[in-house]
Length: 170
Image (cartoon, helix red, strand yellow):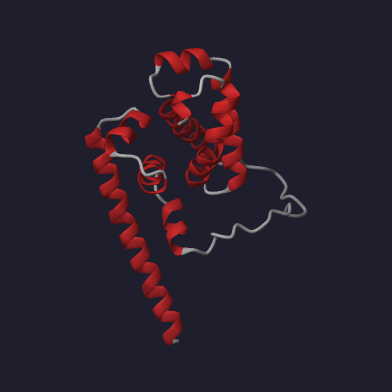
């Protein structure tokens, strides 16, 4: 559907909900997801004809751009920022409804590439070949990242279960 649209505005209207879901799963919250989608679409919009004609699959190109932009932002902000004084108050931020969901917490704890693979596979329903094209990696990398992510999720979810059982028993 989105790959057939020639007008950038029509493409964005048709694919925006899916891009926001993908961005939310990558970043862990809807606000950063909206910023990520907006940043990537801004860059893509000025080169839309190139992206559409040269890449073959604009949606895969955009997903890959989102994953790369998220990883770059994560690397930049990962560094600690020391300040002389602590701020007086915390800014208000609405609670994320998935904040205390064990699966969501485990998914957010995955490294960015593993999280991207899991989201593309299980939220967007893409095949291994489509994921490999979207992220610019081999199918073997997709398989190994998915395998590592599933193993990590199983371990983390088992820990959540044992913590819940411990709370209920105590």
